[in-house]
Image 1 (tube, rainbow, N blue to C red):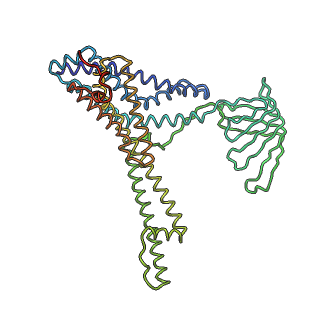
Image 2 (cartoon, rainbow, N blue to C red):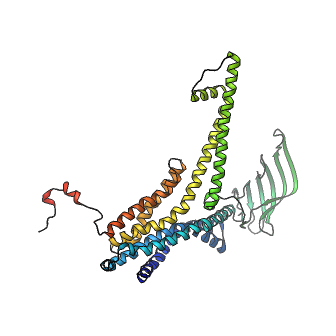
Image 3 (cartoon, helix red, strand yellow):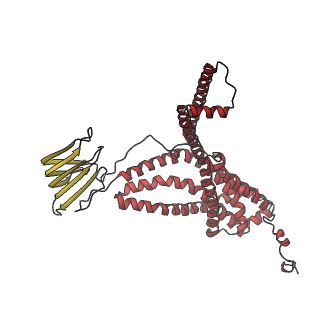
Length: 454
């Protein structure tokens, strides 16, 4: 039996890596267009492009591995069925359950590895990829000076130059609108000047002659100031083409491991209880004050009223209470949405790896029934099931974010439904029973059109 298990396992290895290669290729071809835009628009060097590529392979792997498992299962069992090896094993007394066992065990090991990958490697890769992409988007190519064209590439500045000497750095008719770190803009006008970059290439230097500076006093907008100059040097920093790498401790939910998100959920739940307690305390305090006021006016107890009526009555009489309740209510809804979003990501880190086992359960009997282990059959069925699986995940995530269904069902419903269908098909295949019965069609097809045995 050990030889059989090793043989079936080896049958999956080749198709698995083949499927992994094809799926990675499809995902990379979709991503490569964005890389081309970065190369052309930002002038990135090969090393930075390689970093972007490698960091984004992490999320591709999280999707590609489960799908590759399904491809390998369909191709391996399709090939075994096509060559009648499944029939020979059944004739020898080996049930389909035993044939599927090594694939299930191997998929469970892969799923365990993917859980570790999703909690340790993927969050860090997503974090570094986000920081790198943010730095790339902030990177600007070296400013190109053109005549009679506004230069808007530098944040906070708009520069217009009437004439540029192509053989030197001399310019004429310079107008600079400066709103960098200013509430009110200032305008710098000069008849002529010289433009050059600092030695590090990151600072643009204007050496201006015969000009004026016009600006409004930021402390007193009614005051206007005009300053004439013969010589003036203007420094505009951070205009070079260097990629400045930054660091940040902030992480989104997809940049955290499951334990980190569970810790955040506990903190949010504690904060949620505080907000709910504050709402109750505010209502009770206002209610007690209103009762006291009524007692003082009528010198008798206030007649009992329903809770909802009391709250509505207090809101009408106390606008501050309404404002506080509204603010706390929005805070509570925001915290609930954050909790649901985090729970969805926590379950996703385990639901996707579990799909490896689910796809074995549904792929093995389908491969046997297909009786073809070709690439087209494997990839075609795999794509269909994975699109169905992914539709469940996306739809479930959307419903969970809207707080319509729990996060557990949002992420695990696909595994439960497809896994249940796979177990059913596997049992029917093991019993060599007909998967779908067409006898019901006899009731609607006229007798003369039915196929009869001679």
